[in-house]
Amino acid sequence: MPPYRWGIVAAILVAAALVTSYFVVLPLFHHSAGGGPSRTSCCVGSVFGSPQNLTVLPSALAGPIPSSYFGVDLRVEYPPTGSPGVNLSGTPIHWVRWPGGDVGERLDALNDRIYNENGSITSDPTTLTAFVSWCKSVGCGAIIQLPTEIDDPSYAASEVQYIAQQLDFTPEYYELGNEPALWTHFEIPWADWNASQEVNATPSAYAEVVVQYVQEIHAVDPSARILGLGGLGTGAYGETTWIRAIAEAAGTEVAGYSVHVYPAGGTTNATASLGAFFDSLTDASSISSRIPPDRAALASACPSCADEPFLVTELGSGNAGGPYDGLMASYAEVPYIAALLIQGLEQNVTNTDLFAYESTYNGSFYTPPSSAPHPVELLYADLLPLLGEERVVVSPSAVVPGFYTVATTGGPGGALTVLAVNAGNTTLELSCSPRADTGLPSSRSTGPRTRRRPPRSCRPRARTTCCRWRRRRSTSSSSRRPRPRSLPSRRPPRRARPAPPESSPTSRRRSRGSRCRGSPGSSGSGGRPRRAPRSRAPPGSSR
Image (tube, rainbow, N blue to C red; front, side):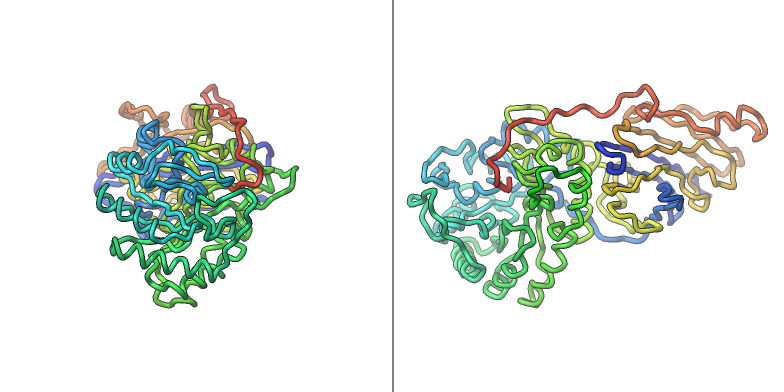
């Protein structure tokens, strides 16, 4: 048998105010040289006394994670040269949507000014030229919004022509407008806007505008890819009707559709609980509930459009100023967004853009003027980089409400990674104990005894645990005991000592495992505290 090496990394992150609501992330790595088992089963814990297991099939591919999948909205109000070029490095974020949100309808990018709802004008802090220059410098993929509420296709064509010919830049997509169901100045020029206007668009009227925009844009740039819907603004309500109208009118001239996902955004209960916050992950506005009917509506209206991509160009939990505002700036946002990202992967969504990199919305990375990131930054900076490029099949032995998993291959060092998120109300006792038939260290192994990872209780405010076990096997008959070591230390693993005889007191004492840095009951440091910023967007805003 050729020599091989296995490594297991487990990180448990728990943060909640209730015992029954918590978050768990469990990345599981294996490294193999010269082949290895094709099936890995990792014990996840017990639910009501019934053991549950995750079964991972590394050879059963479930589809790639496209390089376009992780993105972020970059607001025009905050110049990109200030920090994203540094702070986004090391994250899997490669795509950026600009100018980000409702300002996309108000930005006159060719004249460097922003029109406000009441008709007033301000200068734009970030110019189109500055954004394109920054995007080129970091190699980002761009989704550029074009103002559509004013119904001026010639202006949009002029902006596209300027980007293509003067700036020599090709965005991944142009997105038509932002949330047309919420428009109040439809077909009114910017110069005539005022706060009392309530002129709305209908699905059929909007579809006609889309056709005109597509024709004018393709006249100056035939290769431009256009998203026919820039989100709707009403969650899932009416979304299929708008998609069907656009598909019937524009057909294959539209390259895709984008939706905006804020599942907890419709709540008006002032005493909303943490449990209700996480329960919204399964309501009609979640990704898993919306994308299938959206695809069906597209296929029925335009059969040749059935394979066009769906993008989530705004991703968040709730509305700014809503009852969940405090939770959105807390650690609860981390499992929430992680669960939505897994839903998007399961639905083969092409792109998900967190709203936003920097804004007054509490679900953003940063809320100015504070320079301290919100907890959601931990997800993108510390956990998502562990995922690989190809998804593989992972399945629990039983359905646990609120439990989300994704497994990938091709992670750092060629790792197989399992990301597990528990956003449900069932307490799981976690351990990572692969079965004996996998060849990984396990307490159930029939071979030489090995030290296994002790269970970690999923209770509130548990500290972060990060440990690694290694097992080496060669053609010789000698066996070695793996020794845990803390991450992210990069020191070479110490040479393991031979296991003492099974009957010795030393063997029995060591087989109980050992505490790892940061585990519950140890002296290690936990997660960094985050302080929720106080600034908020105006009540009623979706951002």
